[in-house]
Image (cartoon, rainbow, N blue to C red; front, side):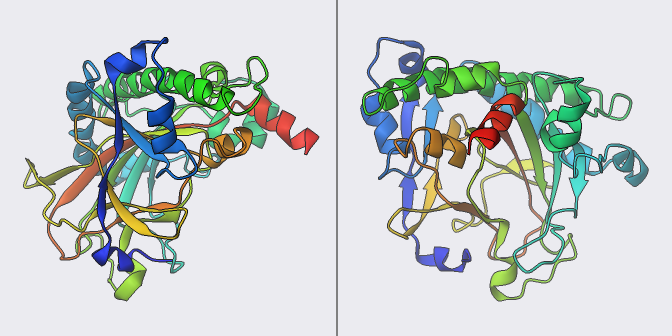
Length: 325
């Protein structure tokens, strides 16, 4: 599957829920939850009018190019081989669909809530990509930690509010055990993960685009965690924020009917996508969808920064599921 067919794909707007609606626990948001996350939805919706979000987004995304351009020896010290590069800096460690190393993007991973989610050695050894400790560039870029944690915590907090309404929707169709809804699982998780992404221009990253093999910044995948929060990407050229120079670039989703659609949301909105684990536990009342991020069709010296916050299930929950399957 490639993003090449996206050239003729329709563009769809995410289902939106306002922050004020989300705050109201008495509001019935089942229709919007079903439209966004249900069996016929795109597996994504966005939350509007979140207080403080726009400034926190800008504060963090503007740090992405500074992080990516730190001296190589400094970035090397931020790498964590033990976690399979899922904490700290990672560049060229992932593989593209072609099998080549992905040089198009650099990533910085951290837990936005807990620097040390656990000290239990057996959990750290068994789940190093989730249970490891944060690595911050305290001397080289001290403001990164503050900005990363501030935006990450906000996305978690709004995600918890959304999870409450997801549980209300699911409970109408199936019996849910106490403390096993999405809200409670996220609330008790110690393994939240944030990812700050910096996309290099294809020409600068020394990548050769050969047909479909370089057609996307982020290849087709379905999130395996519970809930993913996303910011809209920020494009910069010569240090200045610009609109996306290519209308075909962006987030694409494969629907349940095998249609590929481009999905858009505003830069002042937080988008949330359902992961496969939640789909399983909700018995498909909440559904995950395959998606990719498509590269600019023309080589520009344009950079893209964005932030994603993943909510995996707590390590103890994973152990419990493994033992009972």
